[in-house]
Image (cartoon, rainbow, N blue to C red; front, side, top):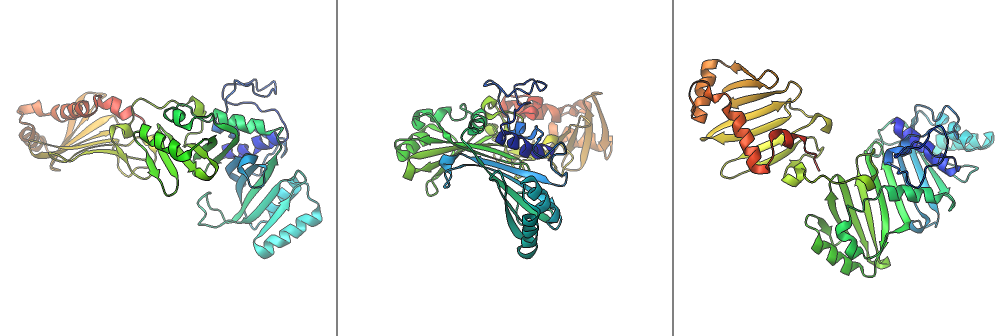
Length: 422
């Protein structure tokens, strides 16, 4: 959340024509020079600046900035370049309104009127001396754009003049992947119109999204060419939207026939890389056929014939997960169900047959141990399943798992586990 507090600050600096430093690509922070044309802005660069506009203290620590959006004049009914910052503040509204009224340069009598209006109606609008509009209203639990607090939702709208809009356009250009749309260029036909851009950032939903407009001669013809050249995509003719994935980039096309425009929106949940620098991996779990749950914490690959087989993967950085394993492999051998799980933190495998016999293999010490319920039961159950004798069963479950992964994916288990989701 600190990054988003800084987000509001960098844009106020842009509004005031202040120098911008610290963006991806490296500038001399001590020099105070503006970034060069070679400097690229990653989404997180918005969050890294402090602002003299609010003084050395910055925003009150209880104010939580969660959203920033920008659209150029060509995309606005008002014909203005509009930048909006959204934040929450706890409390009854008195402190939030007072703070923003003072920051906007409003006199005491106006500030008092706006506080009275908020207390009576649950909302008020401040108009700052720099032309900004500040809408303050009560938060509601149903609004999923932010982490709910009992207090105020504050949305500040600024109008950016043409002298400063180039900085925003550069940010959109730095966060537009030409690699992602390379298969479409022939059918889009023209260069993107960089006077018609916008972006949206939300820290609560972990979304960074940038769009640009492509003017085309004929939208239906372009759409037909695009759909014929994409392999994996979705298309909703009724809404006029089409989408596909490029690695972790989510690409959406809005096909607007009435103004001969295709809007290309690129969205990612990673903030530390300029979209234009992102190259999709040659291989990923989704490309291999793994399906993921809604919160993207676990991916599963399933085979249903001649019997059910599955491989599931969870990595700790993907979020909370109710199980204690990182890889799970379920299969049958000679008609006997067995299960293999890998536990990354302790670096060991757990093998189980028919839920009645199990043991562990610790990779660091290369030791088989912890037979349950006893060595005799484990020996009999695993030898029966794998057709082995004596202690020959010990290595068989892992060898079987490694062989299946090689046959299915052409990878080792370690290589499979390290693959990105997309």
